[in-house]
Amino acid sequence: MWLAQALAFAGAMVLWRPAQTVWPSIPLAAYGFAVYAAGTVVFFRLINSIPKYRPILPWCAGAFAGGFLNFAVIIANGGYMPAVGLTEPRGLHAPMEGARLAILADWIMGGISPGDVLLMACGVGIVVVLVRQWRAK
Image (cartoon, rainbow, N blue to C red; front, side):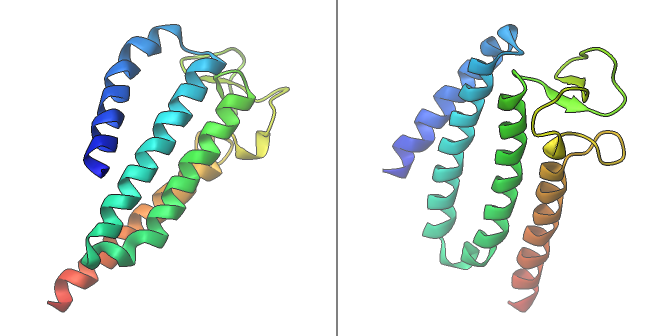
């Protein structure tokens, strides 16, 4: 069952690169959110099926929540991530002025969002838990 989900996720990822030609757009951000959600489900099922990796599930949930926060602010702002210090859109980033959900945008140290902080912190947590498990053997 999870193999079929993984293949569907891989197929959606193949479509990601051509879809970037229409970036930024709300439909593409929504597509990215859907692919991310599908990947999250597949990843959680995989990790849950391997008993020795189950201790990292809470950290994985936090990391995926960080990604969902990033997608939420991108969708709310028409496919752009608002960032401090910009006066015109550049790449995936847009100025903070008039941004929706600005508290979730890239405002920490001029380019880091709260979602990014959550992703980084949980990534470190995952590594720490896995290293402790491997050392305990």
